Amino acid sequence: MGAKTIMDLIDEAGIPCRTDPDLWFAESPEDVEFAKTLCGGCPIQKACLARALEREEPWGVWGGELILRGTVVPRKRPRGRPRKHPVAA
Image 1: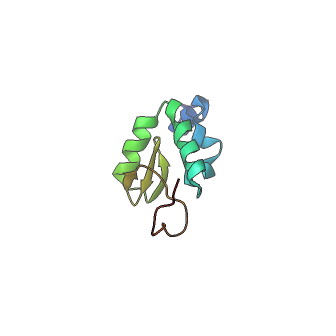
Image 2: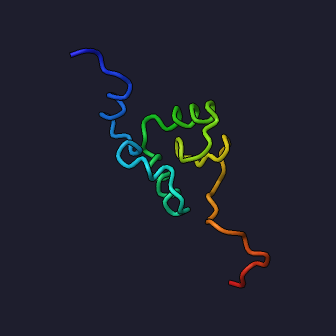
Image 3: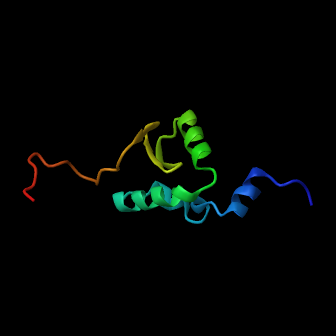
């Protein structure tokens, strides 16, 4: 058998995004936060984030961070317009 490719090594390492890739492009803020958490133990987390920023990925969770329009953003906002007035707690 020939030399292993990087994809073989990624599959063998149990990279979380390889099992459910749709989660890393989820619409709900809760799913996005869950995907970011799963990236925490990934052996290629830093390299993944660096490459995504280098490529200016348009969106998704990369290396444990949410990227929109090529930049890291702290949180995904829910769909719809923001409220004009804050809601009383």
